[in-house]
Structure formats: structure tokens, C-alpha cells
Length: 431
Image (cartoon, rainbow, N blue to C red; front, side, top):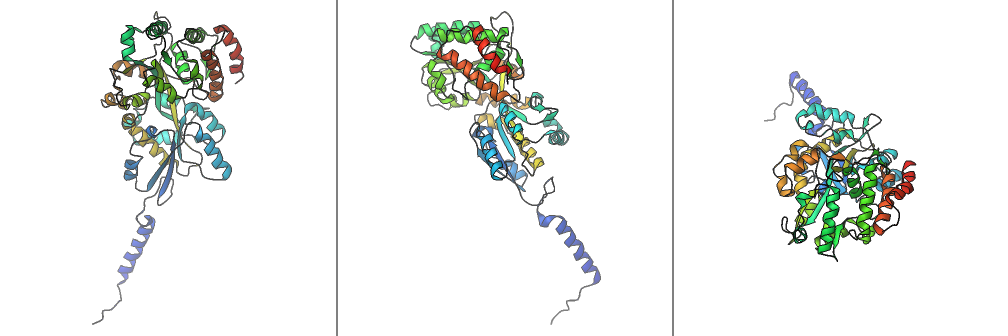
């Protein structure tokens, strides 16, 4: 028997309410903070795999099922060029980008960067405990004209990796190297032990050869105006003379003028060098090398922040990498959430080869002993007290001048430290 299709009036009222609810909820999809319903896609760029969460944001996407994150690796300096190419072609920019801190100037000038202050405040409001773990310098060094333009969660600390066997053969105790003078004397002893070897391996190749030398300038107490060093200051003249002495005495390889980071590391890994100036993140490369064991083949100590050992003249330097949200993103809040996830992943990133970071809780994580076997109270305290490598909006141009200066020293020059300062300071002062 056929039943009647007639419904009572209350049934239609209830149906109308249900339709309104479903419509408002977007048919079960989530809605972004900026009002965008449905699936949100974020594109994230970084220089190296270890600068990203090892799970490639899988945990983040599980937590936020309406957000899809795709990542892309862009080698050093490629971010700027490729973003400019996208702009010129009318294509969308990525949403979240990691680049060298000194490149922030170029991104700002190109209109790639949006201020983070609104999303920084939201972070502090929504997760005050985790927000408080971030060192203030991670924000402060990215403030330009009162606006926060980036966040430097990763900030590598330069140090000296050394060949344990070579040091033992020369009778050099790294614990006694408490000054840059003592380091130079130790290098002379290492050279006498193996005259044909490279004492200090380093990178002096243009576009790569300044980070380590700037760490020495900071350690010796050179004076800076933003990113520009005062080459006539006592600390800077000391460093220029230090490198000049090292080059004149054959303690530095002249071929380093054309060495990339990989070639400098190759000399150390191949037992050809007693020391290498490199960041803490390089320990992952050494630890993964078969037959190259921590404690028997290599170890590390900080660059001493003193010229003679009589007093502390400067400080340990860290080299920051900046994350910024681009001006092209349609989802700045969601991009800021992805940035929070990077912050939550810092220890896992260290285990995957990342450098040190600006998060007090993560820096105390016992798992770091696995990533950095030399990491202990002394190193941790030194890092927490370290100074960001001086930077400014003209940082890229300053780097180019310093590369030319240090390249001239490494290949050999008859000019004194004072004469070198006289030659290059006017170039720097024009920037």
C-alpha cells in the first residue's frame, strides 16, 4: 500500500534550519582564519632539507586537515631570483620562505615581505608558553622601521672543528686555546708537525667566504655600524693582521679563494686539514661520514672571544636564517601557523642536520647530545650569550666588499692591515 508523502508543517521548518546549518558550515569543510572556506594550499621554500621539519609538515597537515603544505628547496640566493621571476610573469609567490638573514634587505626592496606583527601577537595570545621560549633576538633583529619582518628561528654558531689525531701528535690541547693569539700559536705548532698539511681549511669563494671571517671580527670585538665593520677599530685591525699572519706563514691554503663549503669540508674529511671554520650544523656532515668518528677523528670548540686571553674582547657570533611571510600570500594566518610548526620541530630538525636555534626549551633537550655530541653546558651558555652577526639592509653589499678584502689576504698581499683598512673602508662607507 502506497503511503502519503505529505509532511507536517514542523518537518519543513526543521529541514530549512538544517539546510542553513549545513550551508553555513560549508558542507563539512573547515574555514580558514581569513574567511577562505575549504582547502587552503600553502607553498613553503627553504634552502636545505634540514631547514624544514623532517616530516615535511605531515603532522601539521594532520592537525589542520583543511591545509595542504607543499615544500620546495631553493639553493642559496635562488629564492630572490625566482620570486622576482614569478612577479614579472604574474605568477603567485610562495607563502612562507626561509633565506639568509642578510638577504632580507633585497626581499624587502623587492616588495616580497609582509609585516609579522599581527601574527606574532596572535601567537603570543594563543600559545603564550611556547611563545615565551623563543629568544627575543629571533624577532628583534628583523625589526625594520618599527615593523617585524621576519623570524630567525635557526641561527648557526661558527666554531672550529679539529683533527683529534693531528692535535695529539702536535701536543696541542684545545682546552688551552683561550684566545685568538693562542689559536695562532697552536696553528704554528700544527704546521710544524705536518709541514705539508693544511692547517686551517676555510671557504673564501665569492658569495660563500665571509661568514667565518665575520665570526672572527665579532670575537675580537670589532666595531660595527649595522652590517658595516669599522676596519680601523682595534678589533678589526687585529683580525686583518691575524689572517694576514696566518696567510704569510702558510697556515691558510691560497686555493681557498675558489673553495666552496664542500671543498673546504673535503680537505678536513680527507685528513688533509687540522682545523676547519664551520657552523655547528656541519657536525651532521662529519657524523654521517663512514669511519669518521667523533672523539677519535674530530671534535669541536668555539672561536675564543678574546685576542690575547687577558680579557673578553668580543663575543661568540651566530649566523641567522630568516623565515618570512610573503606579501603574495592569501593566507597569512595559516602561514604563521606553519611557522609555529617549524618552531615546534626544532630538535627533530637538529637531529636531521640543522644548526642551532633560538628556543630556550629546545636548547635544553637531552636529545641534542645525539645530534651534537660536543654540546654541553659550556657550548649552550656560549650560544645563549652569543651575538647575532651584525646585519643591516645593506648586508648583501657589505658581504661583497668583505669577500674581496679577505680574498686578497688569503691569496697573499704585501699590504699591512692598516693599508687594507684604508683601501676597503671607503668602499664600505659608501654602502
